[in-house]
Image (cartoon, rainbow, N blue to C red; front, side):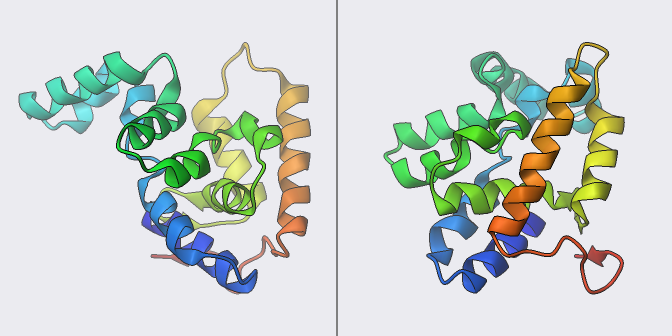
Length: 170
């Protein structure tokens, strides 16, 4: 999330828009990411800490059906952080057509430029994402058209997917 916030902040500065909310949204956007993970992965990530594992299971039960993006948005709305909730709500891969504001577009794009803790090209991020997330039931044409829209968004935001160095590490 820190890497996504760095990318988002840089874009916000370049586009002369409000950095505060974009950086805050980037730092929060994947807080509930564990709700999309299998119980086996959660158990492994909890490193034998049963309190942590049980807490994650409670969150997963509450938000799994709507996913981490909408779950975090729902939580932020519940504490009256409406603007943050709106920015975070649609950062899922297939939500590109739901983006309305510049802030939403910046967070969405910044999220697609980060692979764990590295800032990478869209091409590399998409390849890695397919390795980790592709299911036999996924529609390859929908994925391809979504990727094309993300490359178009990159141009709209005035970005160049090729970092100065091959890969930036944080």
